[in-house]
Amino acid sequence: MEQKKKTTLQNPAEKQQFLTKSITDDFLKPFKTIRLAVSGDVHLTKLETDIIDTAQFQRLRGIKELGTTYLVYPTALHTRFDHSIGTLSMATEMIQAIKNNKHSNQEERHIDVEQEILIRLLALLHDISHVPFGHTIEDEFCIFERHDKDNDRLDYFLGDDSRIGRLIRNSLGKDMFDRFIRIFRVDKENLESLDQDYFIYDLVNNTVCADLLDYLRRDCYFTNISLDMDYRFLRYLYLREDGKTKQLLIRLWKEGKPTPRRDILSDLIRLLDNRYLLGERVYFHHAKLISGAMMAAAVQRSVKEGKLKQSDLYTLTDETLIEKLNTYNIPCVTKLVTSLRERKLWKAIYEKDRTTLLSEQPHSRHQEILGKVMREWWKDAPNRQEKEDKISILVGMDIGDFLVHCPDEKMAMKLAGMKVFWNGEIRPLEKCEDDPIIGEKLKLIVKSHKNLWAIRGFVNPDYLDKKYKIVEACNYYFSYKEEEKAIFQRHFYENVVDQIAKQEGLNIGILQTDYELKKQNATERLTAESAKTRDIVAIKEIVKNAFSS
Image 1 (cartoon, rainbow, N blue to C red):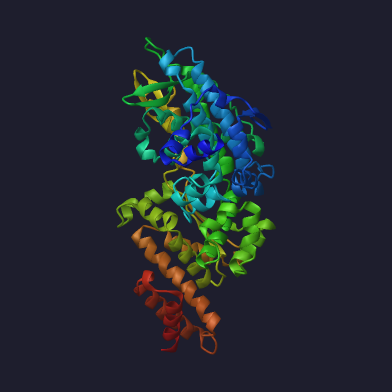
Image 2 (tube, rainbow, N blue to C red; image 1 turned 90 degrees about the vertical axis):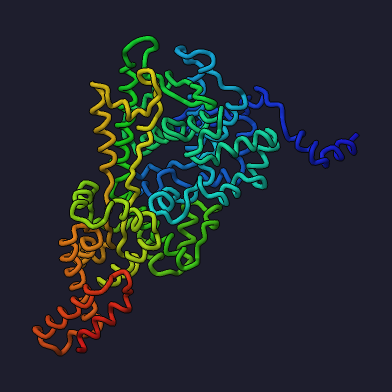
């Protein structure tokens, strides 16, 4: 009998059939309870418990949800481990809200057992591929590809041969495993391909989702910021078929009546406002931005030196990454990491906001200034580092002593894109601005959130005496008014000539009037040539030649 069973499982076709399970309510039975701050008791199934007990999931205990924010708010020590379990809890709450919605018909409330299992797994594992300081080094500084877009990384954590992948496949069968992976890996632009499972992605990852609703409450709690986080609107969640897909919506319009549900609309506006306030007080706090820039700079320079690879991060936590960076003996990296540990943060010395930047558009030869800034200072990490280091050296500092922070200008507040049923049609919440009472407030919140964006310059406090030189450099690099840019360029290179002349002793033994003439000559040579094709060695050579002529 044992021999027959063994032979059956060796047949590929029958093995495939064996791995296709019959899914019942038994797979949702509570197996373990974890008590969690913010979420309370969270009930876990046997499979979920087994997943949490893997080394890959336990690693999330060492990755802080808010990165370097603990340097601003000391209790912001919550991790991707507790957020992941909290997201599972929030997803469960949302499932029950949909099922219990008294305003919905049976079809609009229906979630089958398989879909509920997939929702819970997606919620629990949505951050499994996060690396230490992931949002900083991926989203803000584009050093690595996003955690949910890197196929090699996803294979490592959830692929066929991964520990978690095998657990899911062996428990639920290959068909369910493949279905889960398809949802996990789906491109946001191709959600329709999920058909009836579209709403699963919506519920966990999209706009008003379990991920966001958990981290808003959790971030408020651990930064001790008191905001009203009552999610009463969940009672109006429902599922609506749109063609062959099934999507998650919020019902904002009373059926058969010409009026909206203003109380629910107001709740959603308050949620948008709370998200903006957290952005202003936490996510874009100046010290958080500075410390994040320092960490990103240390990682990026370690990558450039060939010491750190992306795959190295898969087994690291925040602290073990910092320890690893310290072992590389790269002077600028050691300085940055040591300064972070001692909370000796760089100082903000330059800022140009969105409104100021856009005001220069009519005076610029560039068709779209923000697009140019994004390409050069956000998306192109090597270019940003090269310019940072060039400025540092030319004004007499070390590499890494001047850093630029330039986030994505889209500043998307995904909450504003939540899909609602409004006046007989499905639309994003931000398109409800035609409401005479709430509309203006809605537009103002979205605009205020976008205006948190700015391009900023930070400098090592040991070099604050060079502040004016660095500001001149920033004025030159970040000015798009052609006439002003030429003036800033000249001021910047005058400072560069001064610095090089002192370093090389070119100012020794000549009269001040002669020095000024030679300085003017060198400056004219530097400003006459293309800055893009001139490296630091070439700049120094031009200055020396000008002083020797």
